[in-house]
Image (cartoon, rainbow, N blue to C red; front, top):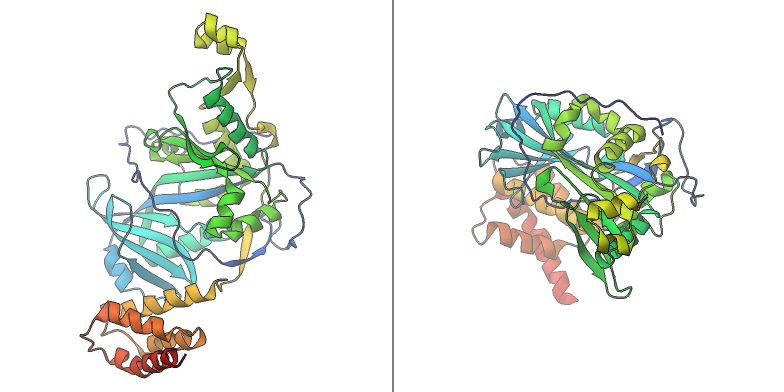
Length: 425
C-alpha cells in the first residue's frame, strides 16, 4: 500500500476540548433511496450486482463532527434564514452534555446535519457550535459541498475537528471477533498494550459467544468498537450501508466492522480543516489515518503458555508471534460512494408523521409567521396516509384545550371526518 504523508503540524499548547463523552446514535430518517456511483469516475454509474469478492475491505467515515464559531448569533441566523431550500427543526431532547440547544438542518428535503448551540459549560466558547453530519450523507459523493453550503448559509466559520470515526468493513473482521473471544479466555493470546481495556458488550445466546466488543475509552482520545455490522443493519434499517458494500464489491451477508473513534486530542496533530472534507472521501487517505492510529496502538501476539508461566509478559510476547488481525496490505485504495437519487423515505407513514408533527410545532411556536401552505401539507399527508386520528391526537398534545390558532381551526373538519370514519369502522 502506498503510504500518504499526513500533516503532523504542531499547533502549540492548545487545550484539549472533547465534544462530550456521550453522543446520541443517529436519529432521523435514514431510509433514503440511493443511486450507486463511483468517486473514481463521477460519470460512470454502477448497477447493483452480486459482489465478486474482488475487494477485501470497504472503508469510510461513519461519524464526522466539528466545531464552528459564529460572528452573529446562530439563533438569529436560524430565524432570519431566507433560503426556502434550507429548513431547521428545533429538537427539544438530546444527549450532548455541553450544549443546551439542538437544531436539525434539512436541505432540499434531506437531513444534512445537527447543530448543537448555546454552550452550558466552559468546554466551549460562548460563540461556538458543534456540527454533526448526518450519517446517511457521509456515504454520498457530494456531502462536502452540501456541508459547506449550510455553513455559509448560517455564517459559521470552521474551528477544529472534534470527532471522526473511520469504519473498516469486511467479512474478515468477523475473525477479529473470534480473536477477541479467545483473548479473554486464553493465556496464549496477549496484547502488547495492557493498559487498554478490551471489554465485551453484546452476547449471542445461540452461538454462546460475544459478538460485540469495545477497545479502550473514548476519554483517552482513541477507542474502537468491533461488531457484526450485518446483524446491526437488519435491526437499524440502514440499507444505504448495504448499498455501499455492494458498490464496493464486498459480500453483504456476514460483514463485521472495526470502527475507530478519534476525538480532538488525537486529531489536532493532523491539522484537518474544512478543505479536508474532500480528502475524507479518499479511501487511501482515510486508510492511512486508520493505519497510523490503530497499528501502533493495539497489537496481539500468540505466545506459548510455558513462557507466560516462566517469564514476564514482555518476554513471552517477545518470544511469541504477532497476529495480523487486520490485513494492512489489503486496505482499499479506492472507494465508491453513493448518489442520492430519490429523497422519498421507504417507510412513508413514518415520514408523513414526522412532517405533520414538524408543521404543527411550527404553527405552535411561530403563529404569526405560519402560512396556509403548512395547513395544506398537513391535510395532504393526513389524507394520503389516513392519519387524521394522528393529527387529532397531536393537536391535543401540543395545543391542549386552548386552541386559538386560525390554522388549527381550518384543520378541525379534517380531524372530525377522520374521527367519524374511525368510529364507523
